[in-house]
Length: 350
Image (cartoon, rainbow, N blue to C red; front, side):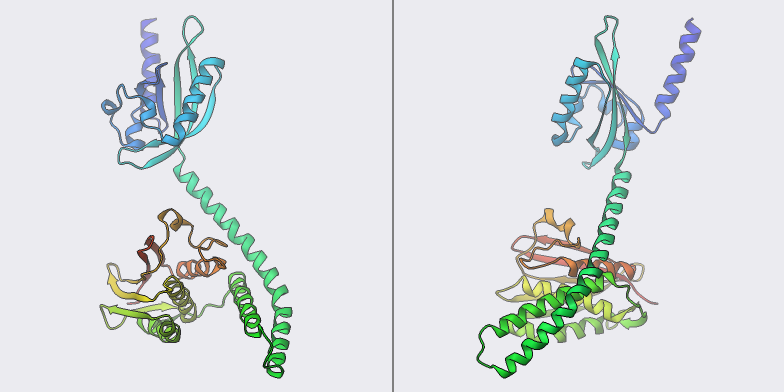
């Protein structure tokens, strides 16, 4: 019998110590009496660092109440439960775990321990988020194609007749306002079409500095009216890349227009170009505008999310898509009332 017990214990220890799942045993006082070695791999803690620790100290503050309620319910109904909990990694980040909680009864039928078996689902969550974003893009594309075509035809007719009527009736009030609003609708429609319609991409070797200078020249009347100055800082004379020129012009135009609109009282916009390791061109654009709250930065580039009163969010979304098509990336750093820094990285052509 002793040999059988030893063999059984050895077998279960072998499973517990070599599984990728996290296994812990919790007592009635919420302290843990056993942590499987997999905790070091997933959470970064060694076994001796977890000895005697109260489990709630490792759980995200927003999940503690739910965890405690589940444990309390288990001691009452003796049923198993499943839940998602965020545990703190040794380095400070939060790891999302899917946990299965099972009760262990003592000799008198009361709950003596609770065994918690958890699995890291961080990668699955990321995949779900990517899938959700893809579905959003698909829906937006279908919506864009239908709405844009339906709007554009009557819009062109209305705009044409209004322009003719304005020429014949110079004193008519609000004609400029009406034309301005029609142009805004036309711009939104064009953005929707650009989003929905597959673009014919013609890649060519181009100097990124020339593209930026072209965009700055195009925006010069607007900067004069808004008392804004562009400050250039180019570390090298040329930055060759392979790209679709018109698409990248659209990216720079959208970003610089956003920067100008964020500075109603004027100021400076710093534009720098430099070469990073592995032949990457880094374009940074920094304004002195109103800035963006840090918690909102991850949402930039999502469809129909905009910080502007009349914005659609499609402009930045198109920018993200174009940069991704060019095997690059775009990042944001911002502080409220201090301005925003946008960094774009694109692979250079040798």
